[in-house]
Amino acid sequence: MSLTRRPEWTFGLLVIVGLATAQIVGVAGGVQDKQQKKFSGPDIFRTYCATCHGTSGKGDGPLADLLRKRPPDLTQFSKQNQGTFPSEKVRRIIDGGEPVTGHGGPDMPVWGDAFARSREDADPESVNQKIQAIVEFLQSIQQRPALSPSGH
Image 1 (tube, rainbow, N blue to C red):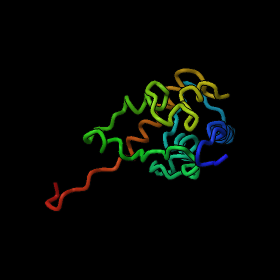
Image 2: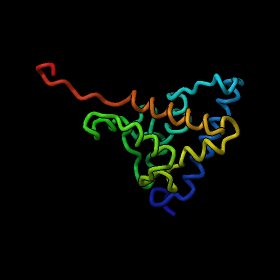
Image 3: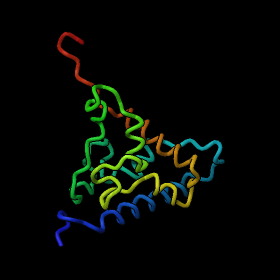
Image 4: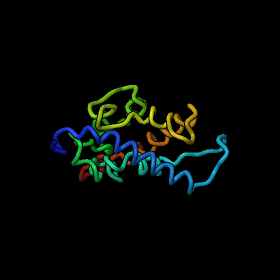
């Protein structure tokens, strides 16, 4: 079996790596009251997404070459949407409400489901907060259009 042709084991590996990392981060972070919990988008992204999408979101993570379809450059959402970041669409993609190739299939976990099955912070409000934190982080890393030589 060629690893680059159809790695059926990849989905399981991604979930195991993400959840194991999350457990380590959770234990190191200590216990907080759920009402006061504030999730960090960059931290959640690094824990769950960077393995495939890379720490900068450009689709160049360490497992990217093993996937059937290379992860997209997540810094291009605004550019692909006439300069507007599609927050609600990105939210639906992350939580599995809007399936995309390689997202929710064997290559990409549906993070809404994965967060809901985790040991910590699996309540619906925490799951929504985690997804929102990722959406906000992705919005913050969008590439800005280059200014023309005249400054506009």
